[in-house]
Image 1: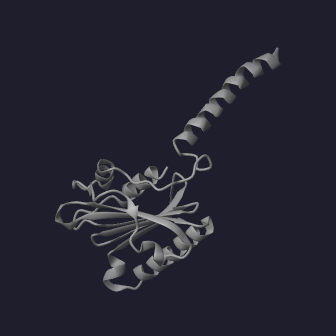
Image 2: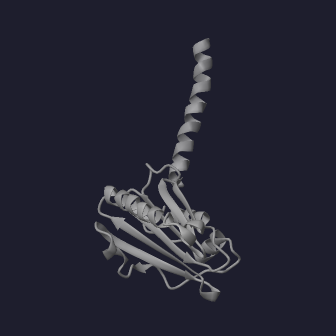
Image 3: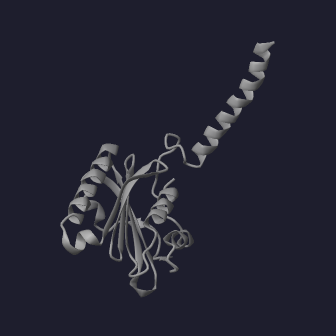
Length: 187
């Protein structure tokens, strides 16, 4: 009798667990189910993520990055897309695909060390700088950096790297929400 009761309870629990894993994997919340690809948020998604009251419009469509990939060794392909707003505000997104995941991780580590080193120089730079490191979202690990009106984000997952460079003057964007929008678009 006890065995039948246990079986009646165990079967629905297993079915629910399998359905949950499949659904989460399909939507990209379990990184071992799918890998990132090149992808960019729409203008409305970027405007919403920026959260500073400005409208950001795509300048054209995603295209081969101009010269960006030559700065990094081991990059097999690169794409970029610029979002512009009034008053000179912009959000530039560059995505790189490395030939190996170790190349992407190495570039992340090196870039973070360079940014951290620059932010501790003292004076105006260090007092106006904000760095958040090793943030994780949907399989990506990234850091964000803010200095005066500029925000930068740099992250990797597997062989893919994304970089966000933005300038918005006095009304800073939400660099974390913008990073999350880019990451979501890459799945």
